[in-house]
Amino acid sequence: MAQLLDGRIYAEEALEEVRAQVEELKKQGVTPGLAVILAGDDPASQTYVRNKGKACEKTGIYSRTIILPGEVTQQELEKIIRQLNEDPKIDGILVQLPLPRGLDEQQALACIRPEKDADGFHTLNAGKLMLGLPGTLPCTPKGVMRMLRLAGVETDGKTAVVVGRSNIVGKPVAMMLLAANATVTVCHSHTKDLGQVTRQADILVVAAGRPGLITGDMVKPGAAVVDVGINRINGKLSGDVDFASVEPVAGYLSPVPGGVGLMTVAMLMDNVVTLAKARAKA
Ligand code: NAD
Image (cartoon, rainbow, N blue to C red; front, side, top):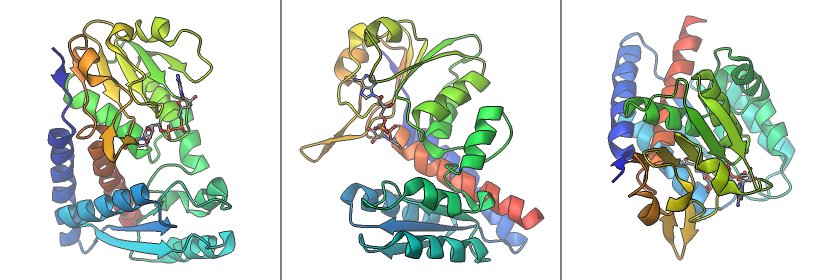
């Protein structure tokens, strides 16, 4: 029976560390600040933004949410980002994705000053990750790595398989596993015989957005399985891993909900504090 990778416990621990750092910073007259831009009325995005606000409250981070109509123009959006770039109260800027149709995400992200890039999605930070240079790391992959570390899962010399190759999860988590000395394979929608590859994995990270994609027969006994997927089925959340069949096989397994999603928010708070410290020093 797999040991549960409990996001509630690990995220709470990470948030407590952030809270203590915020308290220290406030003694020095620095209040870390996060601005979140939410365009349109996607219900999932609204929930994420609300959760981010709650985490700011919990940790003492100043938070500002800017809600824009779905019809906002690229020009208006970029103007707001540029204003936040100059705003002394703001250390981190996050543009909630996906943006409404018609808006260019990459162009919007490129407007964020890399020193205020709370999500680590700016090309400069993505490039730094690729080169192994210090920079802001994307929150979900960072949360996956933190979870593995806190659970004591060894990465050095292990075989890791990542399912999914998106810029926000699959690719960066693969880079981080590589940096942690794992031997990494990345699978995607064109991969032939997914199970044959996933069965090799000591560490299996799944971020495909396909409910129940990974079943017990696709998992190596004792493997650490991290389920990043968030799927809504009839209003209920489920991951990409079929929990019932994988739990008896895996050594570690993260649940959905209560897993990586909570780590993502905690790592965002961690990023904001790091950015605030860097800005205070500059
Ligand atoms: P995406 O749609 O951008 O990418 C999905 C990837 O999965 C693609 O690279 C695709 O090739 C691959 N894929 C799709 N079907 C596949 C299949 N049958 N076999 C192998 N690979 C397949 O998605 P994303 O933004 O990377 O998100 C992935 C999932 O993670 C979604 O469910 C999303 O909601 C979730 N997510 C969760 C968090 C979190 O905090 N827990 C954060 C971001 C995304």
